Length: 97
Image (cartoon, rainbow, N blue to C red; front, side, top):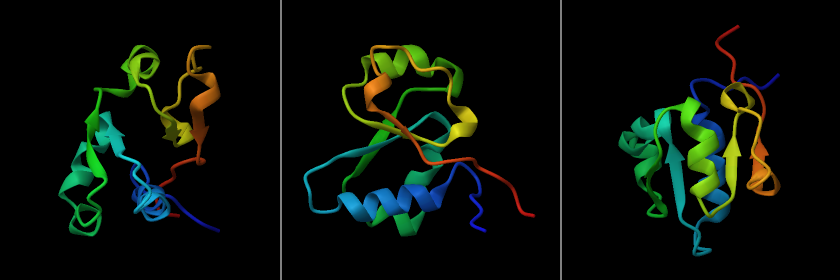
């Protein structure tokens, strides 16, 4: 069984590996801001910033964001029609078992 911890640093790292060298900028959202301080993630130069604030503001913020969105299901609110075709989920975040 795979377990995701925190807001899923492993998923973020996998996304960064898959997009490296492809001209794709990756942004975190809200509570993922501390990811930019992790040495293992700082090495990815295309992790360029943090967009938006708290999870409860996502419906308005994601509507304005022009790119694809990857989320864990824990913080996902019902998507607006305006971005429903560009939001993807990676599963639940769970604590240690």
